[in-house]
Image (cartoon, rainbow, N blue to C red):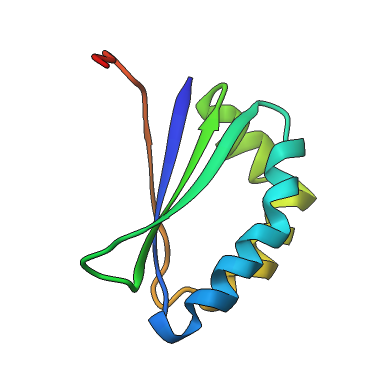
Length: 99
């Protein structure tokens, strides 16, 4: 299992609208082949920063299949206008889970 972590920066005054926009397109992630979960986290220390966490079967499920699908465009159309800077996206894989 791969976790996509997208670091997103938005205008904090737009937080409610941004969160609503992400909620409105959560179903495209749910329906995406190879997607196993999605969550959105907001930093407490810096409320302009969010992390979108998406669990994928493989990196290709995200970077090839999803990114080249109409679903990705729906995501960008809904959320992209809120980004103050381009998202920084990384992929990680759990190597140990302790509790």
